[in-house]
Image (tube, rainbow, N blue to C red; front, side):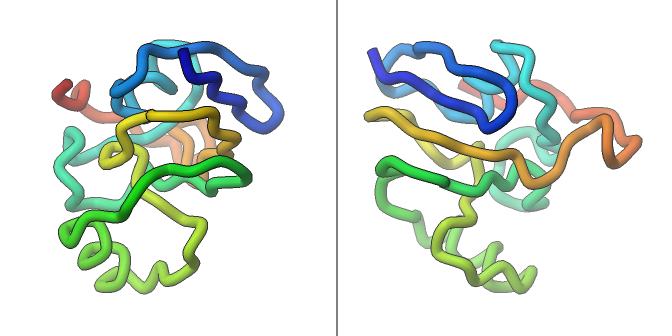
Amino acid sequence: MPTIKVEGKGSFQVEEGTKLVLALEDNNVDILHRCGGNARCTTCRVEIISGDAGAISDAEAAILDAKGYREENIRLSCQIRVQSDLTVKPVMTASESGMEPGTRPQE
């Protein structure tokens, strides 16, 4: 099982193929996901510190580019299916933004 390490929060294991946003939420990591995991809002952005987050989809690349997020290590956690160990840092959190996290993203 892959291990997810969240900077400043610790680490946990997840089933391979789990959406990263769900793994974070299910392990009490403060993460926004306002569009429900549909690659539309970019609130679930994470910085990939280490590990392979997999290929970026056309939809993810398009919304990140449209919103001006062009750093290679910034990804949408709702679009990543965990396949291997990752170290990540949430970019936006519910507690820092004052917003509700959003509806639970689909599996």
